[in-house]
Amino acid sequence: MAQTKSDPNYKVIAENRRARYDYAIEEDLEVGIVLEGSEVKSLRAGGSNIAESYATVDDGELWLVNSYIAPYLQAKTFGHEERRRRKLLCSRKELSKLWNATQRAGMTLVPLVMYFNHRGLVKMKIGIAKGKKNHDKRATEAKRDWQRQKARLLREG
Image 1 (cartoon, rainbow, N blue to C red):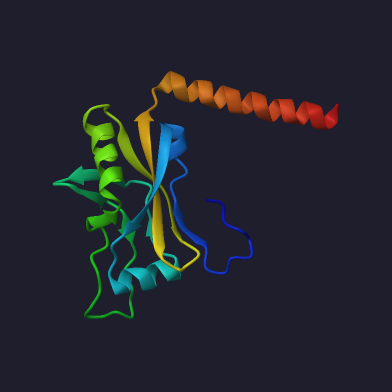
Image 2: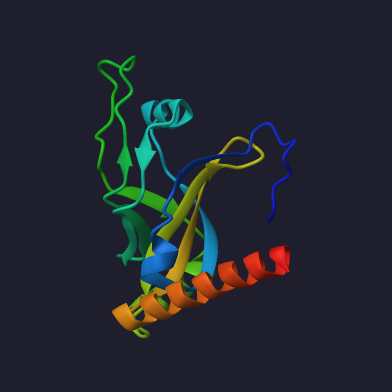
């Protein structure tokens, strides 16, 4: 779902750029995330990191593990824990698909991007991914370099 530039509410909060380098993303899925009030305020201020985080299916629920949301200083007594497990929201059908991918096919659930959607709600895009080996990473890098070189040659020639 591509967002337009004129959409005032759409804003990327955190992006995991390394995920596409380390993993071969088979499919991606948009999920909701359960947050506390001080976490949303902190995200609006722009303090978060999802680079070291991952998603997992436990007891029939989808969880985001090890994501960082900076503490919101104005919320003195009602603050939040920075690296707590956060519940992700998706349909039962999607959840069973994710469970099958991780348990049977040996895939990994990698957070790709966290953003405010057009309604101003926090959403996350997670990818169903397979880890790349070093030779796969080198091949991807060589392909990208060749594409860049080809574009340069076409521009000049």
